[in-house]
Amino acid sequence: MSFVSGYIAIIGPPNVGKSTLLNRILRRKVAIVSPRPQTTRNRIIGIYNQDDSQMVFMDTPGIHRTKTALHKSMVASAFAAFQEVDIILVMIQAGAENDPEISPILQNLKGIKKPCLLLINKIDKVSKETILPVIADYGKRHPFDAIIPISALKGDGVDLLIDRLKSGLRPGPQFFPADMHTDQSESFLISEVIREKIYYHMKQELPYSAAVTVEKIDEIPNKDLLAISARLHVESDSQKGIFIGQGGRMIKAIGRSARLELEKMFGVRIYIDLTVRVEKNWSKDSRALRRLGY
Image 1 (spheres, one colour):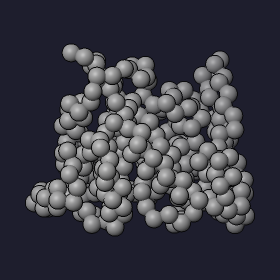
Image 2 (tube, helix red, strand yellow):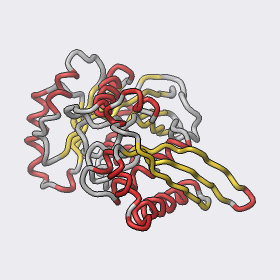
Image 3 (tube, one colour):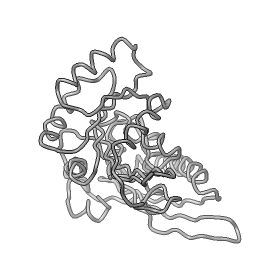
């Protein structure tokens, strides 16, 4: 049998489980997740390897109404994936199939001459009887090549999805080495893990006001240690005080959570030095966005 390969975009509204699906497929964490919407800001590449195939998945930011320059950059990145991949996966959430953010996605799919599958995620949270009407409704709204109910969290339907994707791929090259699971740099992965912990520790809208850059990574082989210096960029002096917390408690809690996660990922001891810097209104400034990696 010939080797098949291709690029596959995972698109959809915020918080429908796109990153959870990518991590489930790869059986490792390459994309951060949180209960908050709009956690993913960049396109994340995940590479799924089998003996006879290679699938290169693009986890894209959630498509939503844009307000700031950051949000516009995120949505533009997601829509650009339509043109760059071989197969498109549109993900919606069971129980939220009438999300108003879905209509613009379907509108942008018109005229796209590529295989397009609809994934109905989080089926573990609804009764089975509610799924069939959703399948029928979306079958009328767009000529999807397949509609597959899944639970990215529990893995239901994911093997079926992989088989369906493989059957839709064409013979092609191995784009990445077989032992490679993502094209993201070490510093990007570290910054994303730190940002994930911000979402878990901070309340309300504060996590959306923070960006993370990794300033330095030092390997200390004789101590089996990775020393990391990273900076949290916030938009105001008042935010800086909240991120540091009384007696430095908040920044220490974020750093500790990130350290534990990174030690699992890299298999070595981790030391993290976190500092907070005010970058006024960075999410609305296109130059600041470029400087911070967006």
